[in-house]
Length: 414
Image (cartoon, rainbow, N blue to C red):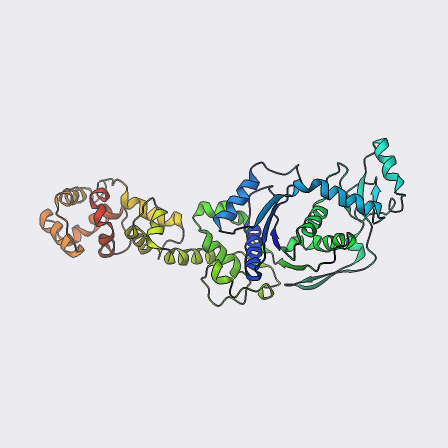
């Protein structure tokens, strides 16, 4: 069982999406269930509606899950397990400052009867797990063995004063209850791994868990937000391709889809070091995926259902890499034309003759017809004709464009 456990406290970023993708991919490789757990125990920072947004993003990227739940649904179980540790003498009540680090240990030897006394008196208290006496070793599939000393683990809080679990305790309990066999997380979650393993050990959980902490993606800035990438016109297949390629030495080719990656992807082949985010590389990969897209499907991105419009878009891909950049070139083709400027008179003349023209198959014959009917020489026809057909002074060869827009000709030159 693998899981993706996002917190609904803001927009999803590419590092979080990479965690989801890799978890899903490994689950597919091992034929194991993939669970989505919404970590919403931090009520102060939870943003309403972000849980729905998370699920919509997973759907957009075709990361199908077998089950989903909100962590807050397990509050009673978290509390029950914390009390069990308390009753077994593996945890203790503490009236010290919850943020005290390292913990002074002044409450660690308090009698268990203190729990009842504090509840009766109304004195605020937290529950801390007792400090480990031994090093904790995490077997990480990417980074190798990671050893954490007892002082680093410390006697940490597992229940807040309001009775809600800490993030690390809730996560450890839910991983145990869900039977999670592999924990794949961002690198900054590494600090929690040893504590989560310690919690599960104290609760008597003996099943072995594999860990993998994905290296940090550096210098992402505002572009690390998926919302930002979507707004710029990047497509899911390209984003998946880019994120799986980052720091990976085993990819047999540069451009691939998620189903294709299932055959070769290995966690062990991911770089241990942080990786720089490269928007230009993402742009290249996005363009390659757009080139591979079915022509008719591509046309739907611009409001059509016509393979020829998709082929038209692909003519512009030497200079365009995103949906937005393509739209900036395709939409003017079908938009009303402004007949003004240096070529205004020639455009008006050519426009009139196009409207009166019969259907002409070949572009050269079409151009010759306009030259004859307008009385204009070739050099005075091509520039105004390009403006009429494309709305731009430069672009792909008109000989390539004409066959693709011919059925829309009267609309194009209007």
